[in-house]
Amino acid sequence: MHLIQTEEYLTMMPTWLPAQKVLIILSGIAEIILAALLIPVKTRATAAKLIVVMLVVFSFVIHIPESIGYYTTGNEKFIASIIRLPIQVLFIVWAWMFVKK
Image 1 (cartoon, rainbow, N blue to C red):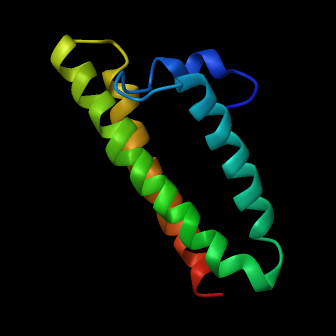
Image 2: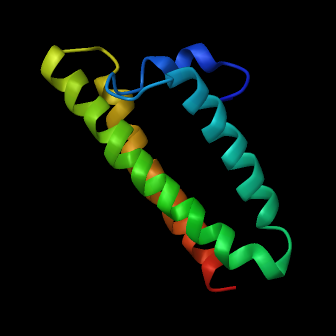
Image 3: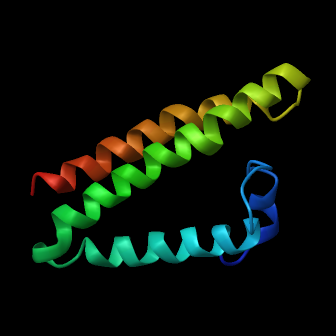
């Protein structure tokens, strides 16, 4: 979705990040590459660790501040952003399961 609906991700990006559209596209490419690297057993653990790092960074840089911003401004997307947080945790746990394989 990062590559197809780039514009939708722009609203999530912190204003202090430069070249936001480029970063969105690069993060989408990174997700695809890391997902592909989960397939070979030889690269699986490293790819999973990098996915965990990426998801943790995204959570603290994008998702949590977004939820706080929605809460403070009374944005109707607040509930959806709160629901997304535990889903991010599930993704992190799921990726971590591949570290041990």
